Length: 287
Image (cartoon, rainbow, N blue to C red; front, side):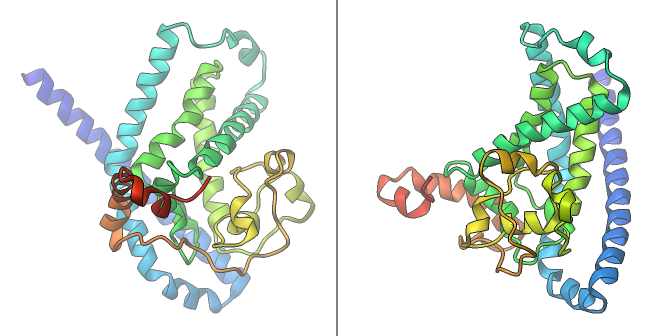
């Protein structure tokens, strides 16, 4: 009994330290992206930040719950799945190949493969049965770097697939962690309210303008640009769309409910309503 209590207290202590570290990182990111926005847009950035304040508060609540509860649970699921895959011989014997690479190419390979998996996972999240959870992420009408934090727990669990596949491919643990780190913080950049297209670099890398078209509402670009880091995947598979900086309306047309609680409940309301054949076609978007 004492051992169980000690383990529980140790878990909570680690969770609290992780939460504090995450809040510190978010504070640094907030300063960096506020400075970038002011450098690019001047005083207009202050008005834009004020207009986004309501959605930012919702994102803050979702982010706090995510860091405190969802992320630790997702980490446990990833650890369980990767351990199960290893125990059942489902991990490819590629350790010698990975170990033959220097650290930087190893990290680049992990990020490239992770982004490839993430590209297809993201496309799956836009299919009608997964969309109700993913729609939460798209419901921001004032896209900012902090919009990355607006993610439903079901969606977050789906994103764990990227790491599980990398583990099955035999990537070293540090490279798996590096993939998460690079793609997460690059995700902040592409969600930022910046008009950058990256010019010629955009042939390889995703840019904020490119991802903004992905969040556009009811326009051609909203069905495109699924990768996080590398635009080459969207180019290769016919989903690239970047006519220039995006000024189109953002968000979704679905009723998400009110506040963070409405965001959390929305997919479950849709899925339950979809059990009624008469309402299924009206509620779920077509594939």
